[in-house]
Length: 320
Image 1 (tube, helix red, strand yellow):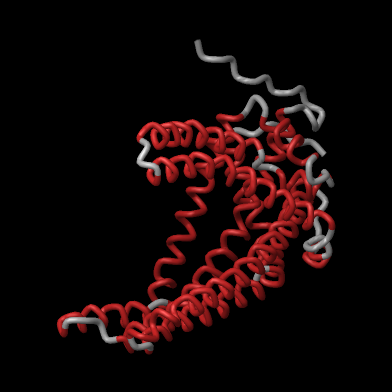
Image 2 (tube, rainbow, N blue to C red; image 1 turned 180 degrees about the vertical axis):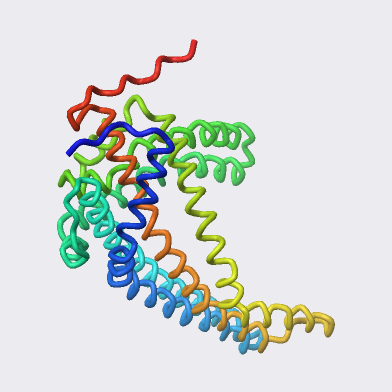
């Protein structure tokens, strides 16, 4: 197998060709792995928002006692749906990444073969990686926010200012780490890297190409977001039409002094499932194409490191 370092035009060309070659397999894989989880999320959101809407039926005396149980039930259903959706998304990413890497390597896989890896060892390793990153990034960003909150509570300008400065310093650090760890999934799926080993492997691939990787990832993610927004905007208006209709009815009822509780209940009840459905379709589209540009860049970085027989591409000279 021979893969040469690619220019920006070459990257887009390989990405679009990869989409064309794999879209049917990716659609089947995302439907099997993510589809049920997306449907469960939509149902959970429907139940949760319907429960919140039921508060509109309470009188003033019952509202206070019924609010927190309804809120906790809403959050419980939402958490269940989000956890299942997260796991389904990881399963789809694993299978689609396997198909894409095999295609780039000239070893095409059927969707049945790729499906076998969707919830195999790489799946659990990637789940662990995302949990570790979530905890690490959460701590890095949470500390300055905690200092800001403590400064506000203690009415300490110095403490709040220190927290704000620390936040501004840590956000670039989080971005720097996120780009260095952008290739955890292909390294884990295609090279069978361990949970921790994939962090080191991704870091090594990006070394010397950080700014280039940042720029291309931003550009390709913007292309994906724009394309999906063209599809999702009319779909969202159609799916959420009941919600918007109830919303405008509620605005009209404000002329009587206060909103009609029945309208507020209907508005919340109509929002959950429709929003969950729109989110499911958007996520299915995202997971079908986003891992592909990561795979193309992963192979490009490997080529730049001389892993396919060519000399390694030297890092750009620093600007003086």
